[in-house]
Amino acid sequence: MSVSTSPTTGSAWRAGRFWIALGALIVLVAVIGVALAPGTREPRRLDPADTSLEGSKALAELLRERGVTVDRVDSVDAAIAKGDGRLLLVTHTASFDWQQLDRLAQIKGDRVIVGDLDGRDVLAPGVTPAYEPARVRSREPECGLPAARAAGSAYLGGDLFRGANGCYPGPEGSALVQVPGEGGTVTVLGDGSFMTNKHLAEDGNAALALNLLGTKPAVTWLVRPALPPAGDLAGVGGKSLGELVPPSVPWAVVAACLAVLVAAFWRGRRLGPVVAEKLPVVVRAAETVEGRGRLYRARRARERAAAVLRAGTVDRLTPRVGLAPGAGQHEVVAALAVRTGQDAQQIGGALYGPPPADDAGLVALAGYLDFIERIVREH
Image 1: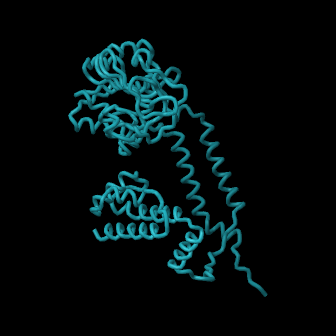
Image 2: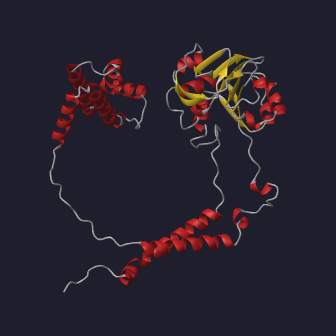
Image 3: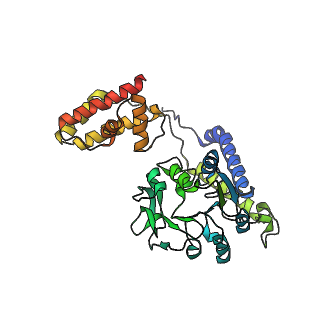
């Protein structure tokens, strides 16, 4: 006679009813909290007071450390009240009408315009937009503008323009154009992502932003005007989100959650214990490495082997020199040169140079990479 050891429905219910009830309670509380809680504040892109990834708080603090006064304003009247002789930064031209843009154009001084240039004829005469935007990515300046040449590569793209001095070129124009204006220099940027907290530390983004915005002792930073409070919107009458939700909605959500839990319990199956199975063969790590090396050699895949060696070296050394995963080529080479005392050009050639031309070159590359790793580990 065989005895069944499978759990019955009754025993499974008694064993799991506490966790089912706890899960249902958590789901109910989460749903009600999401439905009735006030909405979270959205990030304010390129706002010098916003610490989110889309904000520009870090750039504003860097400017202040250099002695530049940064005044955040959210209206044309406030920008005009700051007076002439300052650098005017406009981050959202689409938020202002033509009359307001015309008033902004009367402010004397240098001007930096970011993104969609709706008021091009008013704020930046002499700048012509290109028809197709470009992907935002790391680009080289390829121009003679001192601010761009000193910064080097930067995270730029977006809308492209044509003008007197164009930098960071795309297919049909440049992502940065600087032209002389009546009251000062006018700089037009196709995208301002390089000035955000998310990308400021990459490439030469911080240097470019400081070179463009730090030319005057004071900056008037005009951001997108704030929306009126929720209680001031027409038709709402100052009601909260919970008051606007129909009374039947919370009960419908609760019923739907209970239905899902019942269906999951009904269709679920209790699994037995995990069965441990021994591997038929234990392969040592050294044999795996040797076998892969022989395959590379048989196929003459020196380029692939060199790429694997270099990638592994960079992955292992990056955290040891205090860099985050995915750090740029220049950062890795500079950090290793300081840590090891080796020539930066030699380290860059070993990690990012062309593949070896023969097997002897591959062996020499592997030896040098191992030499660099030993120095980093010992120091």
